[in-house]
Image 1 (cartoon, one colour):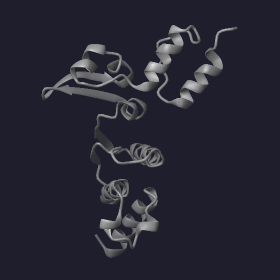
Image 2: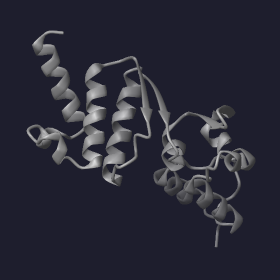
Image 3: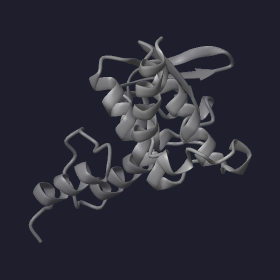
Image 4: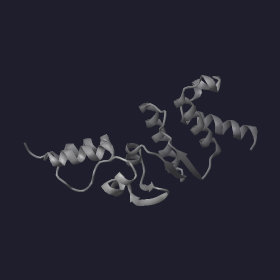
Length: 170
């Protein structure tokens, strides 16, 4: 690549990951989360068609997890294929379209996230827990606050929308 193209890609990736203030900071002075963001920016600058992430939310604070989700959404909109390996079931449930659950080196479940995370035996075998949003939804249904319609919200905004239209008359 030309120097101008490399510069454009690096600046774009730094903007996406909000790293401009770290431009001149030595890497050994960066926190774990900051180093993670730099690594993700490095991947973005390569402009690959398929990108594999291993535990991308590890060491990130909630603000930077939200920033990561925005970057992943942009990459998805650009037509990138994104594979994410994570134990963060809340992140996976909110963000992913499809989930593959592994145990003992084998795939034990594969399908839409809403369906896969309902499989209690699969979660138990993989040492995973149900996403918090599913627990909250099931509790609200169990207490009669919401009617069971089979569509569990994936994030707080969807839950808020559901509560706005789904609360029973008191």
